[in-house]
Length: 422
Image 1 (cartoon, rainbow, N blue to C red):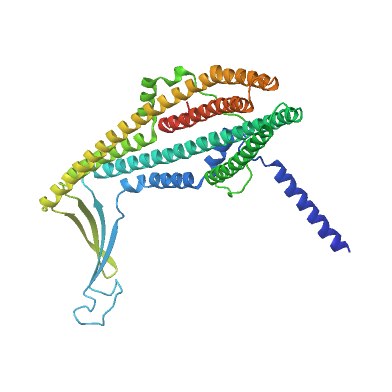
Image 2: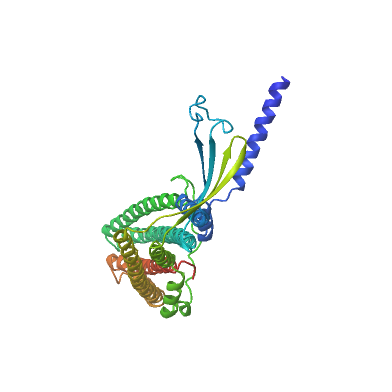
């Protein structure tokens, strides 16, 4: 009985601990910052790029290090002119030669190899930062779409509730003989269409949450908090095109990686020209007779760079690789600048569209709807006019919401191009 009671206590304590841990966990998704912080620590693509950058950084020291020395032993006259059986004992053979050798590259080659590895490591860090910018942009875009779906569903539900009230008005007028039954049926048809739109929005939200969970390295069906609010847009002064172009060329991770590739290609070209000069091997060799060392030898060895056609081909290859790296960076720069220009234009258009919808289109649609509702209740307009006025309100609010979402998407793209937050 006491053993059973102890086991029960252990189970209850473990359950309480798990419950407390689960309650303490915060479900991401309420804010964009929580999603970015979660993904920065857990996204496997980002982790892989960081590990690759770390691996590239570890190649710097070996690239500039001397090769390992070599040791050789020679057993000479192992039969002592036929006077004994063959042996490998150093004190019993005719002599034993020990040779310790060290390869020495031509002056400057080691430094160039180390500098090439440093630039390759810098390029790997740039690619890792670029990968994070891409993932962050996808998270920001998905968050904006989730916010749009949530707000659109709330808007659709609001209009659905309005249509329920309009149906009651139509029923009251129909009961009093002031309206046709067709008005009631049309109100019901509108409600059915909106309920179908709610189902579509629910399905779209389901897909977006699965996409977001994939970016966060979570199960597709894991819960996400509803987006609390859209990010505030930066002030127009922060969106000056010339300033952003300078920031892009200075901070863009892809351009940073391309610049590192150019520097590595320049060092590679210099190394190819240094290969015109020979490398050396130096060595020291003590020679043992019986039990003592009685002779010392020094040796120097060098390779003779006679294969000039091969070396000239390597030099031309290095020049071509450098030219290709420079051309690639130029092409990337022009494409990124074009993308920045396009996104800035789209963001400004979305901002102006939102202002137009908020300050003119929506107030006009609301005034039109109030007038149509009063006219319908007084029998001065038909139900079709009332429905059109209701649709105008919905279209105005949707235009406002779409403009806000488009601005958020363009902002995410601009920050991806800059490689940093605005």
